Image (tube, rainbow, N blue to C red; front, side):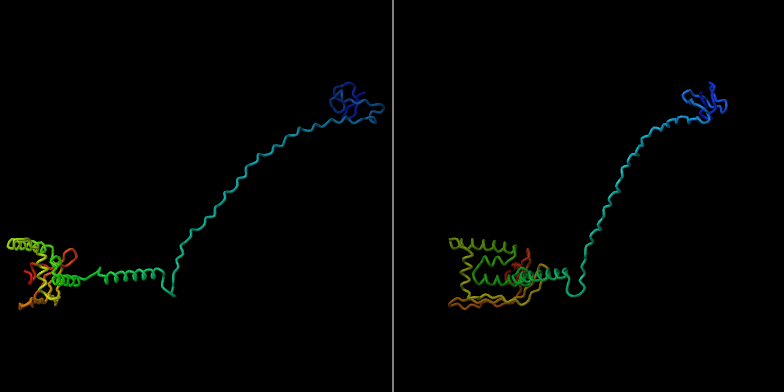
Length: 251
């Protein structure tokens, strides 16, 4: 006989238990022998279906962003200014003093070697050169002591004079040679120019001089030369020359 699995009441083929109303299931009927109350058997355990295991999805790994490396900026190197406070001169001052000393030495050397000469010194040197050339019978040296304009005039005069004398003599006369012969009448350093005073005004100068000359001619009494006068000097291209046309003795 079949019994209700819920309350154990006998089932007489009904589809539902008349006592509790539980539906009858053929496979779940229990056949009980003897006293149905004592012979009641527990209904078979229904296998519990475990829910399918859901695969645990690991969350995607988020890439770990490394923090940017902060570059350590080095502070700019500040120039170190060394200030000397006492205890000696700075290097810059020493350099200036050294340059000044070198410049002074160079100027001194140039001055004593004649590179830097005053106008008065140049005038004296020109008159001394004129005196020396005259005593040596050097006509070209005498001519070189005159300014370019006077030099041209003197050369023209000497040329005409030479032609005239050559015509009278009947042969060529060189005035340079004649001047050298004439200087033989002078004793050694017989022509002298004594500078008394120099007045400079721009590119012109007036030189007060005392001229003396002695003649040395056997058997002839010569008065010679003893006069005071002036030389007019002009500056040309940084040098000084005698102005032949303006000087007292040479006009």
